[in-house]
Image 1 (spheres, one colour):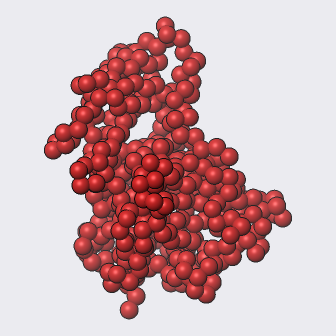
Image 2: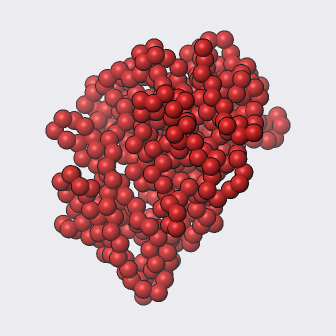
Image 3: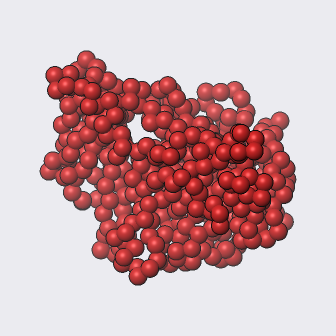
Length: 409
């Protein structure tokens, strides 16, 4: 019997990333106007003895669009001159151990006051491992329908990829989108911060619905270098919109089902269905932002679906609207995540150890897609299997392409 658990309590041409943003407005300031100094000290987490010299530290004011950078010395200290503002410091690095495991280190500070004074801050890096299964491509902004003169955005899809040299199994792998659906703007914070601070919680709030691959453990294999397509409407969209894609191919997966999301198109023959394991409210469709979604895949940590939901369902601390409640997913259970913003001044919803950067398309209806960059050095070592970059920083790992990879296939 399929498992559906409803919590209806009535119980989103140019990808702008920090490498492109390093000089935004900073080149408008003279040396005399760089009146503040921020001293950033970077520390490795306990138990990791890797060097902290040579790390690039980014200081950004996401309200004013200011950004400055510095490099750490032997002691992990970077001294950076800045224009007046309120800044967040961010850095990351990675090391591969003797056993071949890639460890990723990311860190981000709380807000730094550089308006009236120089200041110092310490970043203690957090450690994570590179995931076996990663997001390869995210197509969520839709395309332009020339016949109607409007954006066509019902053709969203996600591609997952086995980035390792061993078989992976999709069984019980879960997919969620972060709350809120659109990244906060104008300096606003996510509702889900630690009380009395601007620091994000250790659990990521899944919005609206959560989806899971069915199977008993080894039913849905994903071999090294292979991918799987997840569609929001698993039909041939190119049949009616020339600039769109065919998402109705056998072997694709639909991110919906007839019971939880009856408003979605009936999948083409041969398309498989993900299982809806959690839902809040009475919505009849699963929604992904056209502008700034946040995607993540995770496991339940060995718990049953029922027990996990019982343990992790939470009311929004800043809203009485039951539809803004969430299923909280511990950061240690998240395998991969991608933060998408509409503007570099948007507020992030993922903590740095989950995604220390962001990816961004030009806007809805542009036909653009976000795709993970190839790690050429690691790919050469495999003799042909593509290895994609995975630094837990979407600013480094992803780039925009003018058309989704499934276009005209």
